[in-house]
Length: 178
Image (cartoon, rainbow, N blue to C red; front, side, top):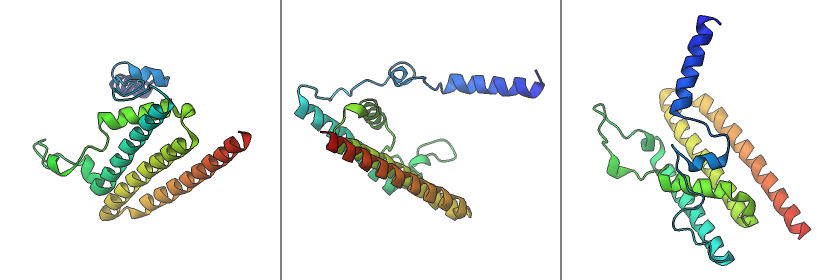
């Protein structure tokens, strides 16, 4: 084995221990992630309560997207040169533990979501990607790299439109089968 191969394998093993990629969704319920199958406030008493709980999770994601739209890259740049948080009161957390838990539950239970709720989930995820693209584009355009960001945003929008069309087709097929 060459020295370069040894060096590459040691760096990949150190990154694997720092940020392990789970082989299944259920592994996210263990350390270091410690997510729950359902949030503590999830009501599973009957179908109506379950639907309302899924609706609350969708609204939590939508609120996070509004935070992302309002904060842009500032959500990720909250430390000054001394490492102190300089604008903590100016920004809500975009990717906090509650948002990650809501996203995990919705993705894990996506097969059991009503078609309308599943469509909202897809829309919320697409909106998050667009919000991130816009934040990156605004940063890139101030640094002179707007061309790359614009290409990325156009590609992302095209993929999300294809995803929306695919989602609409699967909903139509579901409704025609019932």
